[in-house]
Image (cartoon, one colour):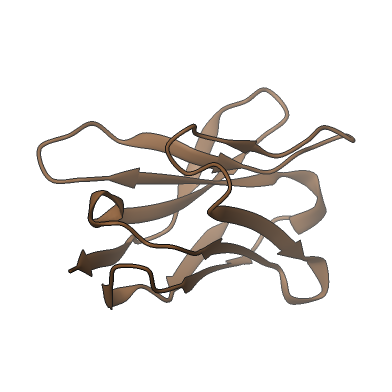
Amino acid sequence: QVQLVQSGGGLVRVGDSLRLSCVASGGTFSTYAIDWFRQAPGQARELVAAEGWGGGRAYYADSVKGRFTISRVNARNTVYLEISSLKPEDTAVYYCTTRGEHGSYDYWGQGTQVTVFS
């Protein structure tokens, strides 16, 4: 059983930067990747960033490429999502989730709200 606890987020201005954190407990942190989704009001949940795994490169949705960076600190059991040049369309609830070797998303964080205003 893995628990994911998220922090960061909040009310920010257009152009600001944020760092979202996802801290994992339980399980073995090195055996799974952590990906980030977001869900805007009235819209489906979308994958915005995925860790590279097994030597692969990280994935970023086209809408966030160049502005979002996913990183991991194994000693802290933490994956970060750094967001820069925030836009109003980045307003959403952001979720981290574990991705196992078969690509399933089994465990989810509680979600953190990011609201961008101009």
